[in-house]
Image (tube, rainbow, N blue to C red):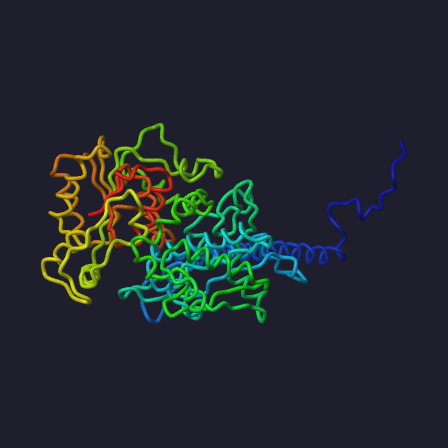
Length: 509
């Protein structure tokens, strides 16, 4: 075996004197290099951790440092950045395309509801999306529905708005309230998801995408002129009139000029008790309703608070475990044993007096055929009413604890109320008042469990979409008693009726 020659100095563990200083310096340099790399790594890790934490806090809205000069020292609401980014990343948004001419038409209603509660916004969104769907069914060239934020403040420079002295988000992306899943493409047609099989309608797009690619080439339709030709405040002729008008427009980017009262479907239409009668069957059977699904954020809030609403059995699966493809009627099946009450407080007393003074009927969503009706008392004037009539409106619109208990006791005698054991109170009432009501309901001896919106536990993002979670509870309750003039009640009623709940199980105060 051959052995390579070895130079003696290299074979010794102890180098010659002349080399020792050099090696010592090398030794020190190596140690400093290793030490420097270690320090850099530690600093990098800390910075990433800090950056990641700040990024997370910014997204989730939990940073205590984020403040605003208008609300010093107050924790600001979340801005739902993740949801905005998710919507803009939908695959139907061809941001980098050189041309958009081969895309379907776009239909946008910029004069939509803003500055009002979620119930008001939701009822209009459902009908705007339905109109777009009907337009697609009637025309060869399909159009994309342009969905928009739930908006409290239209000013893009104002991230926060003042609500009774407290900050709220000026804009909440629709995907934080209504579901969309573009990965499996099986539900969420309102917010950019797929329509069910056999429905060849294009995916909806976000307002920001529409405004970007349609800049300088929009066709604006005169809302006032078209409605003058339609000559009706009923939803069916309004929808058909707009479908006919849209069929004559070949422009790719089409939007509706804001009218004196707002968009296409206004508060006047929603206040007309018969407005939904002729359109109801088709509306309820459309994918806008049959494939309506609440967002994962709302459903998670529901799952986390399921035991608050009513005790469950071991056989009931959380909503988050139910497959996405399950239609709304099966997904949101009845919760047996639960009575849900929707009771408005706060400044609603003033609103009720206004309703009385104008002898208002229930809203259109609360006046569907088969439901109990409100008989407008005689003797009222135009802008004024008698004290007796105002008291009647108050009993239905702003009931006292005693009146609520009396109404519940009355409904308990109906066939649909058999087996009720729990009560969930959907309310914005002050905690002391809510506790008084809970005690009064328990003292009737009819219920084992009574809870309210004030008992739920929500994370920071869920807090600002809590109305949607309450609507989901009301939608699934065995019996629901609501406020006939409330749009939140209206959203619950529409979903209950469309999902096949017996009309006798849906009541009003």
